[in-house]
Length: 373
Ligand SMILES: Cc1ncc(COP(=O)(O)O)c(C=O)c1O
Image (spheres, rainbow, N blue to C red):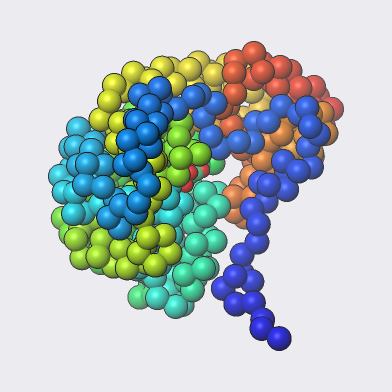
């Protein structure tokens, strides 16, 4: 009988799904990793127009339409002050595929990939699927990734390290100094830095900087997507940005696993990236207000929570039994260990939900806290 591959047997369905399934139907869900806002109207309309004009029926170029890649290139110039030409971009099926391409193209069997722990669940799984060895790196007390810890963990077998700022699940934002350090480490050790920047616009304190701005070699691959910035998780549109030689390798993978990103989504993304950016500002302002309400709630409960400077997650340190108690009382939160061993003792709270519902959930968390103390 045909057995399953060793690679696929090393990964399992994300623990986050199990939490959702355990919760009742009318539970308040603070477990979701997507904004609760509509996709901007002009982005939706661009897809509708393209479909009606018959422009979205066929494969596009494997790399994505030139117009979309020009819009992405202009975005990098505008937002990141880096020059990335349309030939240095591949449009992908979301940030997820972009991460897959980056690792698949750069990690050989048995090579190590370093990533934050707690960190986004895909880093571990995609490393294993690429045949690599996951090397989780514990975070600092403030839940940022310490460049020195990354540098210490590099061996002759290290192929890549992942930086994710603002971060899922912590909401932490790396400082400019850290980003400069990550660039230096990528240059000096000649290892790839995969910079996952899907939350780049959702920053409340500090500023998002990309290691790509500071690297002197081409050892940084940027992964980004429209998913979080424009509330387009369902459209499945992301991209990788890197030097042409790296793009050529990632395109080899993309060509065979995906052919091209969805054509209607490419038209929507082009409009989102090049049209008015006010919907992003409005969403970020709403997230910041909710974050402050949530942090006040935790302070009242006596729960310690590092201040998340970005994304739409908070990661408080919680007493034993807290996550189960909160879920039993009808609020879905994700146990920190779903994001790695060092997530134990924490919970991830997504505040991508309206303020009224969030306040209701805070009340439930308050009662649960009293119950487990
Ligand atoms: C840190 C991080 N990177 C990448 C992704 C993938 O996003 P996409 O929906 O664009 O595939 C996510 C989604 O939750 C994420 O949190």
